[in-house]
Amino acid sequence: MNKIFGMILPYIILAFVGIMNYVDFQYKLIVTALILGILIGLWFTCLQKCEGTVMMKLGMILSVILFVVAVILGMLNLHLDILSDLSSTLSLLIGLECAGLYIISKNKPTLNMTYKYSYRNKRRRYF
Image (tube, rainbow, N blue to C red):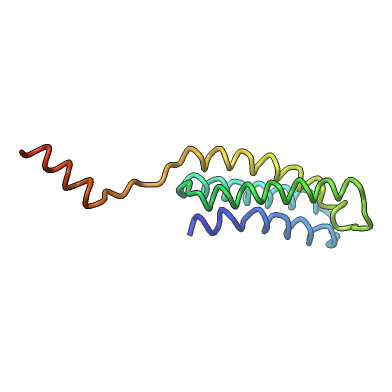
C-alpha cells in the first residue's frame, strides 16, 4: 500500500494544485500551502516505510523525467496554460522526487533465503 501511495501522491499534489488554480476564495494560498505540506509529509512517510525495489526506483526516475519535460514545456509556453500555472509546483516536485529517490535507494528490500542457501548454510553449521 505504501508503494502505491508513494507513486500516486505526487500526482495527487499536482491535481490538487491544478484544482486550486481555478478556485477563488480569500485564504486560498494559506489553505493550499497547508494541504501541500500535509500531502508532502504523508508522501515522505510512505516512502520511508516502503522497500526500494527496482520498479519503484524506475517509476520515480520516470516521474522526474516527466516533471522536467513538463517544466521545460511550461517555460517555453507552447500554448499550454495549465503547464505555465503548474510549473512552480512541478519544479518543487522535481526536488522532492530526487529526495524521495534517495530515501527509496536507502531502503533495501528484505532478502529471501533460498532453500539452496539455507541448506548449504545449515550444513556448514552443523556438520
